[in-house]
Amino acid sequence: MWAVISLGIATGGLFPIALILPIEFASSTQLATRLSGITQSFGYLLAGIMPWVGGIIIDKFCSMVGLTSLTMLMALGLGITSYHMKYMFSQYSNV
Image 1 (tube, one colour):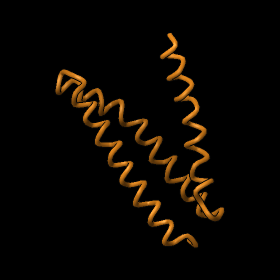
Image 2 (cartoon, helix red, strand yellow):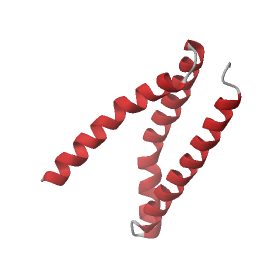
Image 3 (cartoon, one colour):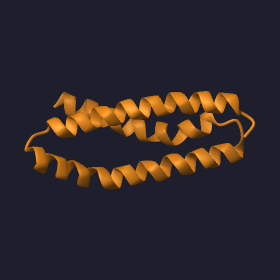
Image 4 (cartoon, one colour):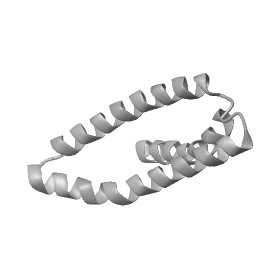
């Protein structure tokens, strides 16, 4: 029971952080608007598509191994992308 409550609190806390992060990261109002639009667009797109893709993967492999592998690859890709975006925005901070 405590694990469910802990995961619920952690997940509920991540959503406001995801909404605030582009605003804290940006150096101007225009950049904050662009970053918020990009993150929310891709976030909601992934949130809408991934349950469907996950169901297909589970049906195809008849296990959760494929879905776990996809999740790990996506986390790795997002980590690499965020590193490159941080570098890119540090180079062009006056955008």
